[in-house]
Length: 431
Image (cartoon, rainbow, N blue to C red; front, side, top):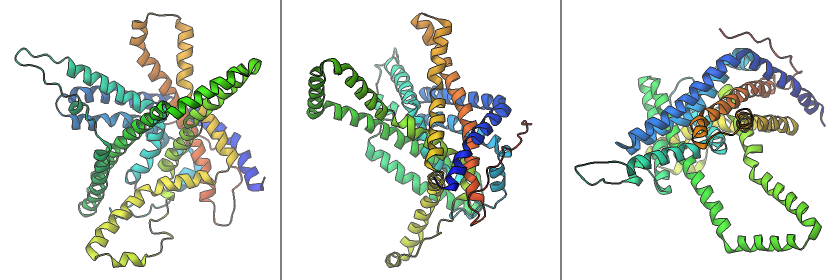
């Protein structure tokens, strides 16, 4: 193992200790922020169901606030720890590059899509997006079916109330959202009205959530399609025949096979979720590291053949899209240079963190004992909130320490190599 890699591996215990110190200092505000974020999620779902009876599109706009409550809580917790992270403090002193479209200093809100994409990967892997959609669909459909009127026959409109879109409509939404985001940036560059950037971020929240919903549906449909094929059934039948003829080895072989397929099925929890969380943290705390949009790009002679008006507006739209994704790609590059063993360590730590809701549920069942189903259904939402809140608190502390460590080599002077492992900074209590 190279010397620099050995040094970075030796930093891992210090990173975990730094995460523990951050948790010890900020646990109280972390819990408050996490609970507020989860309250926003539940409130958005309830309001979306009520509004869906009047306007399905507005209900969908409100529905996307549910994951936004979760994300904003994580961003708030990460921002709260900035003063305790020496490398993040050093990065904050740098001047951010100018936004291509808005013609001002780039802010986190300008690269909102770079945060939303990895976050939605986490949200989908947790099963929270499916949970939101099922709750909204069930409650809205129930309300639609049970509408009552003495004067006229009820007019059922399930598809309209639930705003169920085909993938062609979703692609159209994405295209319109890209153009609208670019237009809002152009208007802001003239009016200097910063709140337009937040409106553009909401546009990105809407279209990315629609894409995530459709991707989740396509994935579930794809799995069902594969399982329903004759070839799949033939393979399963052949496997059962082989295992049945193994005699005493049948049970061990079947156990090992089930474990392997279970491991493949859990690849999102083992790999995707930790990497996605680290990408979220890298964008939130390190988006100023994103290189300029034109860095390293050479002019394309074919581009000059396009008519000037199309080249002017089309080029601006392409540059705008590339810039908004730049922080995402920069976060991935940051993790790629961290080394295999440190990343595996972080993945293992996050794997333990995301299993906390399950552990909380098991502890409560052990402490409370058997209860009636109706009674448990009344209290199960509180159990889920408690598990998710603890997960968010621990994930925020771990993310803050990990991202500060990942930023170290990026802030080192050119040619200086990896810096010596720094002792965790003294963390002052929040005011």
